[in-house]
Image (spheres, helix red, strand yellow):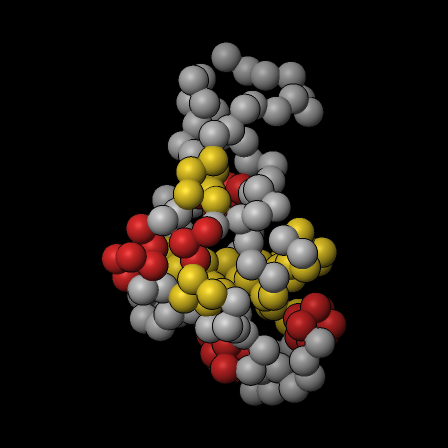
Length: 166
């Protein structure tokens, strides 16, 4: 059954409580544990997920990246992700391999794609900035100038080419 364009399906939100209790995943930017994040449930009674928005309380303020191992541009930006995580702080959601880009606290398993669907991502890598729980900016693919503008950081990926589409 199709739904008219622009209509929304009711989506129940579920708390992501087990993350901190079982794997001690924390946001390295110092904004606390992920236990309060809310993610879209698998679907309503018709099984359709709302892919438009993650709840405003679902994301911490700061930088969020979404990547996957099978993406050449994502593999390219691993040093930049490490640079951002060590500096201003970053949370990375990985779509296909929970060990990519590294097994570290700032990488969160999104193999169920709840976050990716909720953020309405078209491709990866996607870098987003959240303020007051709301997305304020995003860029897709690797474009050094766009990543530096979004993060407020200069000198990102100095050994990388300036551009690689996602």
